[in-house]
Length: 265
Image 1 (spheres, one colour):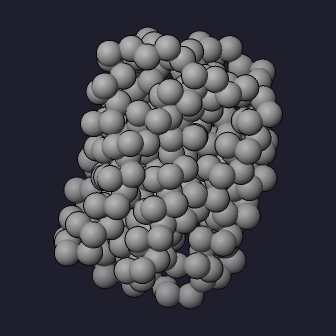
Image 2 (image 1 turned 90 degrees about the vertical axis):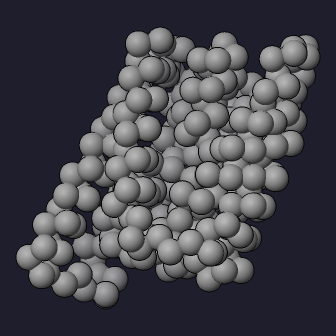
């Protein structure tokens, strides 16, 4: 169901929040849904089921703009992205159906647990990579069966998370792409491409079973589009390889913090 909620003065903060999420979302490879959901539920007290569908609707424009920008800059790995996206399509439809069977409390708790688990996976995988580099191990460039399996597994998980929580599935996408060990800028651009596909299909499913508050979508999107246009341009002038470890650790810590807040709320 699509509806317009009454205007509240607190909504004037949403364009600023949208700008920040759109800017950093397109710079770290996420559409922003991971941050929209806790912001809407914790700060604006939007019912979780409405927040899920609304988050997806607000995330889609960021994904479109961000994907186009990264494609122009050559930051997308189409072969990997296609495998993730196809698996994510099935996951998104499955997640949208699962959403109907969860209570508001279960949605919050489930989101919190998922955030912490994925953050721990990112941290463990980073330690393995650092250890292999220290020992002089060389990562093969071929895209074999093992990497295909990882892309399929994390793609389905990302789609399922997108459909269930409306969070764009950034965390499992990044975890999967980092585990495949491709350059950071390709991780970021390819992630946005995957999240765009997942968000599109999950939003289509939620049109039938969810509630989308267009008032919130308008305010969030007003700022998010400006941020999404700016993100890929800023990223083009930054050398990320030296910052890769810091980016992973920072993203994991933010995920753990938001996960704990969602659980205790």
